[in-house]
Structure formats: C-alpha cells, structure tokens
Length: 511
Image (tube, rainbow, N blue to C red; front, top):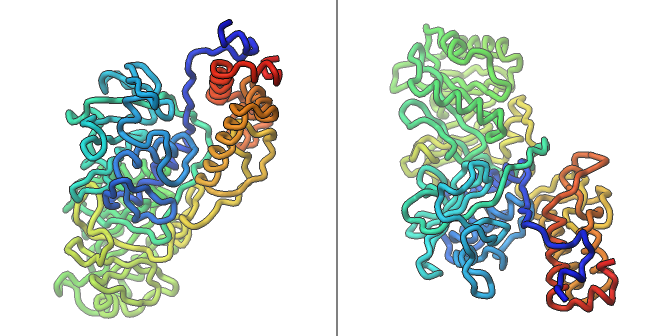
C-alpha cells in the first residue's frame, strides 16, 4: 500500500509551499547587518547577536540572512545552509535539480534572470569544490551581503558582488512576496551610534550606507552643496522607510551672510526626522572674534522654524567653540571635533573622531559609499536615543543590542497549543524558542510519542500552531493559516508514513 494512504485526506502531500517572510523580519535582517559591515572575514566563524565586531565567513553570513528573513535566527552555525555545497547537493548526496528546493525553502534556478523580482532573498554561489575554494553571497530586499576573504571582510554595495556577477555559477532564491504585515520592525542598534558627515566632496549617498544616522551639508554661506538634491532626497526616503532613525543637515555659519535663509530655501518643509547643525569654524582665520550674538540669533531663527530648540545642534573643535562662540544658549547640544582624542566639553552629544586620515583608533575611517570621510560617534546613545535627545520621534521599535523588548508576544513554534501572548525577548529568543520546540516535537513524533504525533497532526490540519503568529502579535483575534506551517507538518507525517507507517496506525494520527 502507498504510504500516503496511511494519512488523513487533509494530509496528502501537495505542492511545496515556501515559508514567506514578513516585512518586519526583512527589515530586522537589514538592520542586523548594517552595523556589522566592515567586520573581518573569519573562516568557519559566526556572527554574534551582541558583538557587532565579530566576523564570519561567506556561508554563515548568508545563513544568518536567511534565518533573520524567515524570523527564526539562532546564533551560531546551523546544519541547514551551513556550507556552499548545501545549496547544490542534498544531504543524501543527490544533486538539487533546477527548480528543486534547498535550504530554507530556497529554489534553485539556472540563471539570475530566472529569479523573480519580488524574491526577498537572492543567493549567488561559486561552486569550486567546497571549503575555501567556493564562495557565496546574497541580497536581502536590495541590500547586498557578502563576507569575502583576502582582508576584505563583511561588505555591502557597491563593493559586494551583485547577484548577476560573472563569478557566480549557481543561483537560488527564497520565494516572495514579502508579507506586508504593518508591524514596526525591531531594530538592533549599537550602544554608540556611528555616522558619516558628508558634502559635495564625497560621492552621493546610496543604499549601501550602513548606519542609522547620517549628516549631510546644505550650504556654506550662499554656496549650495552640489550633491544636496541627491543626498537630501535619499535622507527623506530613508527616514520615511525606517532605514535610518533620523538625519542631520548642516550649514556653515558665516557672519554677514544669511545662511539660514539659504538653508531654509533648500530644505523647504523640514522633515520631522531632521535635525539642523550649525558649523562654527574659523576656516584658517577667515572668521575671528566673538560671534556669539550672530550664532545665537541663528539658533533662535532655526528654533522658531523647527518648533523645538532641541533639534538644533552646534559643531566645532574646542578652540573654535571657545573663541568664536564663548556665550552659548543654555542646553545647546554640540558635536565636538577632536581627532586622536575625545575631549570633554559642556553639552557634547557626539564626537567627530576622524577626518578619514587615520585618527579612528580602530573605529571606521569612513563608510560606504563614500570611502574615507569625516566620521562621528554619539557615545552612549543608540540611534533612537540620539534622536530622542534631539526631540525627534522615530517610528521603528528600537532594541538596543544588549536589551530586550518588553512587548508580550506569542510563541513562534508551529506546534504551540495556545496563541496567548506571554513571551518577552528579542528576535533571537523567539527564533530559538520556535526552532528548539519544533525540532523537539518532530523528533518525538518520529520516535512515536503520541503527544507529539497529535501536535504535528493538529498543525497539519490547520490547528492553533498553524495560525500566523505575526497576526496574533498584532492583536488579530482571527489570525489566518500559515501554509508553510501546514505543509511542514504534513511533510513530517509523510516522512513517518514512509519510514514507519505503523506509528500512524497505532497512534491514530491519521484519523
């Protein structure tokens, strides 16, 4: 008798249904990688959920991306997708055919042209015999991710290879589209916020920029920055989508010049996630003497325009701040420049630590796509906390690297017996809960334990465990059925029916 005949009619195998990622998980995956770009290449390494400087190799970077996109990240190297060969050969040695299903439900294709445009995860591989002779890289919703040896490390565009790079000789993808669940993603943010300070002297910003804050120039007196239009449009779009927490626009203060009028004309209606920085420098003796009256009047004008004095900050080195601006408004926040040192100064909220010429002391000397440039660190402030200190509200749900969000959520295991929201923790905790519980239930079911068989059968028949956990966490009292969960449970029962059908008979799991 065919093994499938032992199954309940609802459990007869059907076409493979891929696990579909939610928008929250995709954005969380991108946020996880942004602060880690620049990490060293470490063969057989693994990225850390807490140490953003810990490096990895090519396959573990892609594995982590896949786990995060699917909302089931578990720190460390896992069996699924552990090597480049995992995406070419089944565990039993058979070649994965074109159109076949590989790790994480990825579909193998013959060409990058065969990857659907709405695929949230695209993977390219170079099969050269395995180990260090092979390579792989990926793209998560437009963000390239590659960990490359030879002193390169973890990179994104433009340095990272594109999916259609000629070095690739194999490709696969995770089917889309992304489920637009409407939830705000949980974003991992380092305790110290790094960000670049750029102008027309650097190339325009693009989506390879890895940090959650950026500072761009609008004008120097009456001179309008030539990269302004491109940089400003990107900042507005990135702030709207949550790619960045907020952005800073700065202009150079020059006495006798209405720099504020030029700045306001360029900005138009100020974006709610925009702060303004007044650059106070002597420019090699061009500006001298006490300029406090003019600078303070500038800040008053900006405060009336923005509606909140906290959104205006000053910039300068210690010498210029003391000489040109000795009388500052109470509570004004400052970015203090000090290359090779981190000077203490009243009101300091961030420190410009390098101009890209080697003063970083181990911190980045620049950022993609600019290369070396002015870099800053808001010490002790996550990007969200930095924004809040400047009176800016972010719409994303922050999660500091060493913190835990406190919103109650349901378990993500497809064999849960209740949708009660009783858990707290970060995405790694939820992923660990889901993965460990699912593996435990499936192992016990294969071993023949009745309680586990009943849980698997319940999910295969659309029970509680098959409901969409992300809809539960949104408060939906009638969550829909996750087809991936149903199919996964069916696959387990099919495996049992094929290898040991008497288990289903004796336990009544097919009834």
